[in-house]
Amino acid sequence: MSRTPEDATAHLDADLVAELEPTLMRYARRRVATDEQARDLVQETWLAALGGIDRFAGRSSLRTWLVSILRRKIVDSHRRKRPKVTFEEHHTPPVDAPRERFDDEAALQMIHEELSSLPRRERQAVTFVDVEGMSREEAADRMGVKRTALRVMLHRGRRRLSDKLTAAGHAFS
Image 1 (cartoon, rainbow, N blue to C red):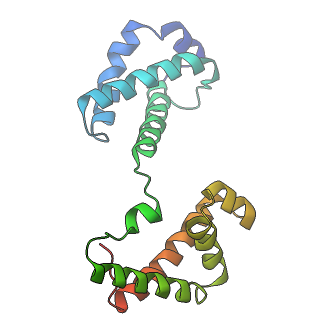
Image 2 (image 1 turned 180 degrees about the vertical axis):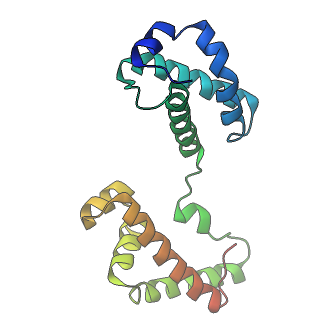
């Protein structure tokens, strides 16, 4: 089906919804966990299409345009659900027995010593976010990098520290 923008505006009605809804539902259902979530995303797609039909240029079919809106809605949904765990939450050692506390103190001392051996940018990222407690936005601004670059530097720096701790017998689960 290939409709022009005028056709789309004139026919964005119950018949069009009935015609394209099964296609959108199949697309969404294959990419999300539940039927309810798929229905919600398809409904959001229809709302976005109604609000943006004036921007539909007709360079693709209306079906293709709607699926592209739905795809963005699905991606946004996955992003919102991504768990956000800080380094401290994930690596906070349990405080059970005195022996474990001694090991934790030794591990913290080792982290402090090994931090200086990290490459400069990774060291800065880990220091700003994990040691000084800056937000990622603030640390990225201070370093003059984008948040995605900061995320990579944090991951690499943390991974190097974790590998050194594991090699020394200070593995965190």
